[in-house]
Amino acid sequence: MKKLLTVLFLIVLAAGLFFVAKKSPTTVNADTGAPVTITATYNSSTGQLDASGSYAWEECEPGEETNILGFAVFINDGTPENNNSNALDGAGMHLANGGNPCEVTPDNWVDNSHVLSSAPTNVCVVVYDVRADDSADPGGIHSTIGAGGNYNTDNSWDANGDSYPEGSCTEPTVITPEEPTPTPTQTPNVGGPGDGRSDNLGCSTHDCSNQPSGQVLGTQSVLGLSTTSSGSNIYLSLVQILAAMGLAGVGFKYFRKNA
Image 1 (cartoon, rainbow, N blue to C red):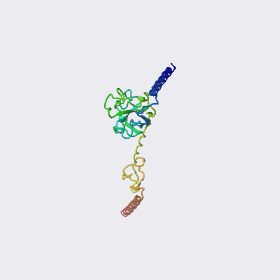
Image 2: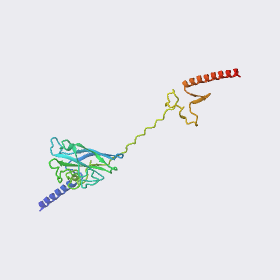
Image 3: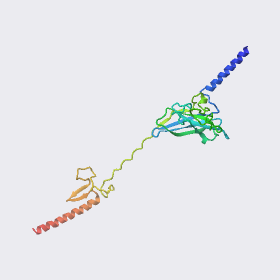
Image 4: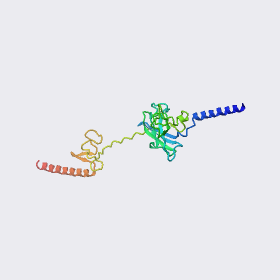
């Protein structure tokens, strides 16, 4: 009788350990693989969500011909059980390594195909065991259905007791690009001719000093003749003044002679 009780106790203990191991959130099916790292960024200007990370899977080894790693991205606590707005890939999934059987572990996954109206609270990834021999079967356990009815249940979320294992989720980093600084409007140079600042309009055609109407900076009137403050034009103005004085002298002599 004592031996029978001992046997029964061992059977119950073994069953209990098996149940705990199957549902423990720290246990991941080695045949399924699991995410190792994940990062995500959200661009508040474009709405672009970029997610990437790495995974590990013991089945990925040189010469592998059957096991293909699939992955799908979920936001805001979405899971493979529901194909809704939180399942960014809908009923589908991405295939790593170009859809070929994986031969390297660990390896990387990347998804930059989603544009969202606002930043999600979290971003998670589920990796799937997809088989080349039955992936086309819509109801197959190793199909490419990532969420919703008949989804591929051989994945890191289901194998982890219906929860995300460590390395599956992250809070996205929100990027807000700086707006470009507008190019300042160039103010035209309005200096006098020959001084290296002229805009070829000259102060003789427009007021370039904000002076009262009729008064233009850098322009003087001598004996009714317009002069400017530049060196070459001062010389020209002096010649004009001397010529005017000479004409005035000739006129004065003529007036006295005929008076």
